[in-house]
Length: 385
Image 1 (cartoon, one colour):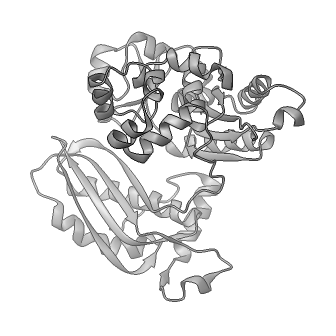
Image 2: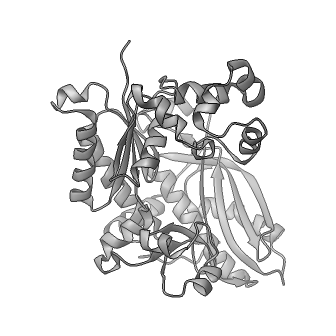
């Protein structure tokens, strides 16, 4: 039976790394990317981590405790462009790639040692060096016979020079040295279960009988055991599944009760969500909005559309009554968002698959996309909604 070798390529401090490529003066300095002026920390440079900034820390608290750190508002269009470049150069070396997030991808290296006339560890170093040289983004690469082990290896690679390999004969030793809470898939409730049963390491976990794991953690827990033992249970999905929904949310520029500011932000959210739908040739059948109060209470509402649509003006007409339903004068809001769900994605050359559905698109929206592609975001301002 062929022994698979899977690599997880994980961009280091990805959002911060993108900002440092854009502005090299930020290199070597404590930098954090935040979700907005009223948001929280979502990415930290090594220097910021060393200073003590925690992931998810509210910005007001971080600024108070770490005033010397540089805080930047996130720019997701920039990060998506860098992500596309990273994945492009990865695919140039490896044919089988599964992109799992904006900064992570699995790659099947099986038999590529023979193709490139080198060992897997050296091949991973070549991939890392090419991405760094071509894009400027540092990555950590973990290599192992399964996805879960590759994820564990990539975590260890961050502190071992950027590449970490777990060969089949090393699995037991590595698992014996790994805290069970460091395993992806062991959440807070599972952590308590492990503690109650004296399971402190990953090896303790895989040493439990199948029946015990199945009874307490279900089939997914059993899959986790055999993935950690090096069995290739979860195959790479190189063709991404169609999206089920598109969301766009962010903190408001200021805590506010002003309906005009809220409407303005919802317009931006709706445009960005529609733009992503059009990029994937998708149409939504359900549209919803969300508001989060200063005290973190969430209010939301949604509506089923008369026809599947990816046009801002059409969807906005359906969302106007929702805002009237959930907005309350005098309540202070901190963030807002739009969720477009019930997506149907059709190929341009196969419209007959969806003859029973009515679709709405807009030449104006398509022209808007072309202008932004050429001149950048916010080239147009709108007054609808």
